[in-house]
Image 1 (tube, helix red, strand yellow):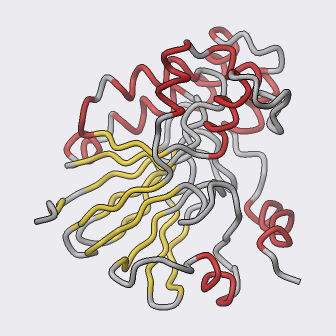
Image 2 (cartoon, helix red, strand yellow):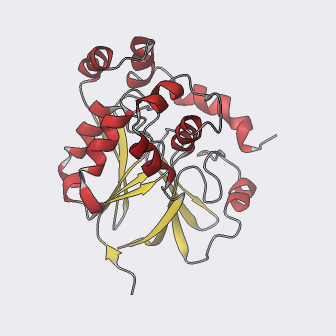
Length: 253
């Protein structure tokens, strides 16, 4: 019989931002959750090794999924690509140990859990079939039908990350949940995550972003860290701007 979980915390798109991760892990409901599910893009950012170390120290209650940015770091370190689209990517890749690279390479691309009140829940990074294709809160119904192709009819909820903007919506009878980004939020600052069971609760953890920016500048050797931290931790990109830029990438006309 499949184990049913009561409360599951979902953390997505941490992107190597240790202060944001520390703030979320300090939340009482995260500490008390049956499981913590990571829906990918864990490491591509300023403190990848430190973030991996902290998460692995949480033990077996953490369930891992790799994202496209994690895969790119692995491919770069293994000589399977010579560049990474994200400018901070090569720095993050070089900051990982060989053991950490092997750990990331072994991560699955999806997993399913039974959660009280939600039934069978599938977790993935971008979509159930791909780690980097885009679906957005306003993606059209036929786009959702396309990305759900082949999905078991028993899956009633799909949890995905990748776009760094939180939302909950129905699509073809399935609940779709995006917890937003812990480390690189678009639209508003704070560390975004989600609590599942028996409902769906989108959360944002405020933390001292000014102190976090200062800390990253002190502790991270990436040459452009001050500009990077200013843009992402202070959420300079608005949701309107990001939706306008990414809308065409979900296949709409």
